[in-house]
Image (cartoon, rainbow, N blue to C red):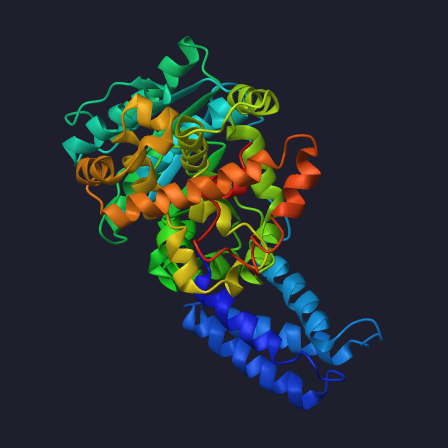
Amino acid sequence: MFDNLQDRFGSVLNNLRGQGRLTEDNIKETMRQVRMALLEADVALPVVRRFVEEVRERALGETVTKSLTPGQVMIKIVNDELIKLMGEANEQLDLTAQPPAVVLMAGLQGSGKTTSVAKLARWLQEKQGKSVMVVSCDVYRPAAIEQLRTVADEVGAEVCPSQTDQSPVEIAKRALDLARRHFKDVLIVDTAGRLHVDAAMMDEIKQVHAAIKPVETLFVVDSMTGQDAANTAKAFDEALPLTGVVLTKTDGDARGGAALSIRQITGKPIKFLGTGERTTALEPFYPDRVASRILGMGDVVSLVEEVQAKVDRDKAEKLVKKLHKGKEFDLVDFKEQLDQMNKMGGMMSLMEKLPGMSQIPDHIKDKASDKELGKLIAIINSMTPQERRFPAVIKGARKRRIAAGSGTQVQDVNRLLKQFTQMQRVLKKMKGGGMAKMMRSMQGRLPGGFPPGGFPPGGGGFPI
């Protein structure tokens, strides 16, 4: 997400570097480029106008100190205004109600409501320690009820059964009663979507809302609809008292217009971002972290939180002990590192949180894509246990068999073995000198100086 904005903002602010001070002329030119960048990102025009004016006024009033360049001053101003635009701070779900706290999910058809219900149920169970029940009030799509049951089973949430011959209000009331009797902390209600906003849809969801009185009414919207997402959210808010927005499919949106428009147009905070298809791909929305990503400064805080939450510490410690004993790092260990990366959302999810990633050429990013990660795992899965433990035995005939078994080319197998050998060398240097020696050996390999072979396998031993 925000790839286009990152590129445009990076080039705009780079143009200010080397200039002695901020003047009315260079600020005017910078603001013209910022306006174009925001419009290309499909940010709503009123939002663009307000943002540009706020930045311009602050820039003209800034005194540039000797220690700062105009570019740095402008980055600080743009960063502050982006945070203000998106809502200052993360707004958490307010579940301070007598259990079960009811969360109503609303939105158009195809926005990702049902998947978001499962993601939110998983997030509440794993991050908040809540017991969760879910129910589908979508009686118009028989598959919707079955879909919710399937994804709820995947995340371990209890499902209140519903039928297409029941009324949505009846289903919601019965689910609330069942959640009380089963002592659930939270009940998440999935409602029917339509292909567009219509009166019948609004009347129905108003009735459901009145019957169960939710503490949170979340509007689920597809980020790829750009500023239309904000306009649709506004239409819903006029009918329902929305408390927040869940912005879905952000992994497929390179523009980011919805994220920048919603708060200003609706007055409602974005509470969560859907970042992929997996049920783990939901993250709270932090305006300061998103602003940092847009300006190419990464999101190290989220990265650290993700590592702490998802890295298998036992496996990591076992590998460290193995290396300290002088045992060889093999392809079994390498695959475990790749699996850890997959658990954390894939290589691209990690890379976009690193500072300076917008300056890395696309052809190098492509070598570190999630598709490439999957290819590496497929190649290792096609090896025999002996080959994984003793990679040196993998020669011509074995390479051809492994390539055929994994649906890849012999060149791909050669590339994996080369990258694996590089990582082996790096990890050998850990012995005796510890992490400091390893970090010295990695100089020039991280953003700003990737190795020619692409991103170091396993993120340069990152999950260890």
